[in-house]
Picture 1 (spheres, rainbow, N blue to C red):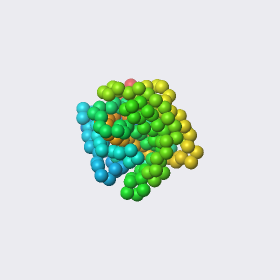
Picture 2 (picture 1 turned 30 degrees about the vertical axis):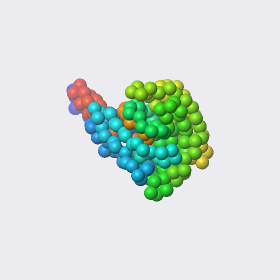
Picture 3 (picture 1 turned 90 degrees about the vertical axis):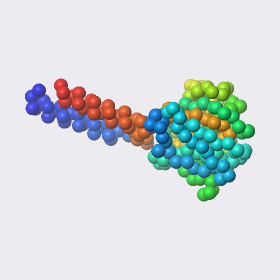
Picture 4 (picture 1 turned 180 degrees about the horizontal axis):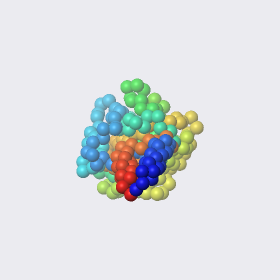
Length: 239
């Protein structure tokens, strides 16, 4: 390869990398394959009890029993997501061991990450009950209001795909590609983080993927992207 060609090739590759770096849309992936959840922080919902959170075989296991109706379960919040705005959340979950009523799992979004000692969560969220009820919920300082409802059949031990689309103050929930809940909350928060939680049912989480214009490439996605960049650059220079 001529020196001029090498210089042009290097310049072209650098331009591609810079363009990719300035791109706004990104994807954050958490698959727990590294055996931990270091980017997540546990927020306490019920002071009397604490959630047990661990990673087993590349899956997050969330256990929080003895939650009574009207009290929040503990929430595991994705710390880097504090200032994200419009985004789509996708994940897989399954219900395992079931405790007393109510048994539910939930995902919060536009969460201000305020825990119970400070007044309770400020967020919007959707929760799915083992009975099949699915709710769209808003919370101001921990005071919950159910603003939308739907239904989906759940079986213990079965994996389900959950997708939540957050656009401004409009929210849509899909389970296995079926739209279950859609609602608007005009007084809702326009930015904030993502958290997951469960009460009175052991819930498994895996393959969490969040993407949107305000989302950076992070988690497992960042490692894959960096590896891809190096491979592409090396291949270009070798030719």
